[in-house]
Image (cartoon, rainbow, N blue to C red; front, top):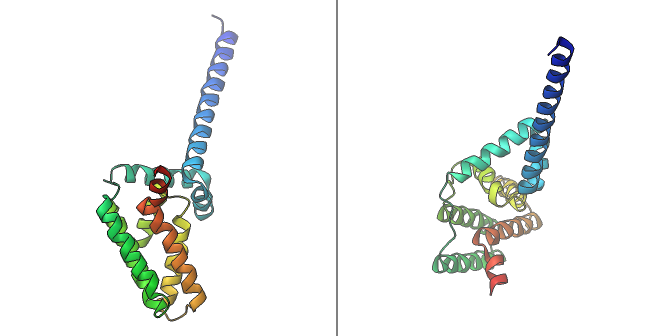
Length: 182
């Protein structure tokens, strides 16, 4: 084989390897975008770089795969539903306290399902893996709950927080899948 043939062959191999690598990256991007939905866009905005955001999302996914996340048993689910109804009914008379209860109740459901419940940002990141559509509700509710603690949240904001918490709560309980299956 002469030198020019070897150079052409090397260029072809490099181009093929590059094309395969690019296709694999595109596939990973699409898988993450599909899995995380709006959380994918949020991560890119937060990190300012798609590669860093994708690495973060992949790390979240890997972390959650090692957790023992499991559905609630029916009795446990019913207890949480009853507790939520009590929390919701208290909103009329004590909205600020109801938001504290809703936040606590969501944390309890997460814990019962197997999610670690330490730092809020870690909880939100963990929840985003299995519940990417509603994790933004969790962030919004939490921000209002913090404003509530500072005495800076009005009744309408507290109502919105309760709605946000309820959406995540229902998703964590997997009530929608259960209702569809019945």
